[in-house]
Image (tube, rainbow, N blue to C red; front, side, top):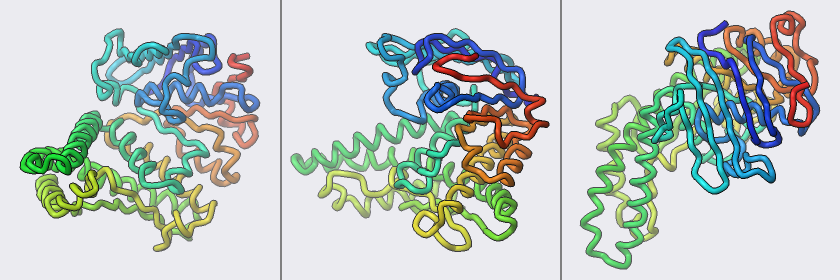
Length: 370
């Protein structure tokens, strides 16, 4: 079994679960059941213990079982460094609380790295199909799990950006405030340069790994590439040069930003392009190409997390086996041999007997395990 694995999960009043306690002792766990029984809710609770956020909704109150005032999630994780017990407390009347080994964390960044996970669901096509915000969110969440410092810098950047935007609006009313703008420009460019540099390095690693995987998936017919697109010059220049470029761009756009009351350049406007054989697949790619690209992307995340942390993440496959043909199903199960994987599905169809013999199978029905 891999070094990092989930040993036990407890849910109380989470989504459609009144109470659930489930223990895991295998690298392959299958949650089988009809639709709308609660399979995905289990994956959601595990993923939320990685990042502190649901990948399905930004509103924590939706996670509390209907008619209840509070909810509880507990994950027990075995790692090289020892056992981590992660507890989430959700309450309709209070802010979310998180404890690690019984100690309440003060900042969300303290959670990052205790339970790394990769989620793969049909909704992940949004990474390619939707707007830049979805792709920035993808980069930010994955890098934050690998480098908690990144999450802290991201929070700082958003705070500084909000303050700068408020100042830009105020300058239109009180022009004398314009002289205070360089202070915020300096802070924004300093924090933003770190974010841009880390995103660039992450995308470069991601592409190297995904390109090899995608060639196998496409039988050598397709060359998959990712390109990080920023309004700030960044490539191979290092953080100090990026900071200078960032500050210079803010100076250049200053009057325009004041007129509009918002910051027009920076990593809050960056994007990620997906290209197959020199064609942008967001605009011109087929559904099959987009789906295969996301599969390559997710498998690459696993390798990068392993390379950067020394431990494989937990892989959460939410109803994706039916989306893949037989060849891709076999390839996926072959690649994830060393990774604890939790799969939701309506049936065991497509899962080879050899995998089933070494796995755990749970039947999920109406918010319970039978």
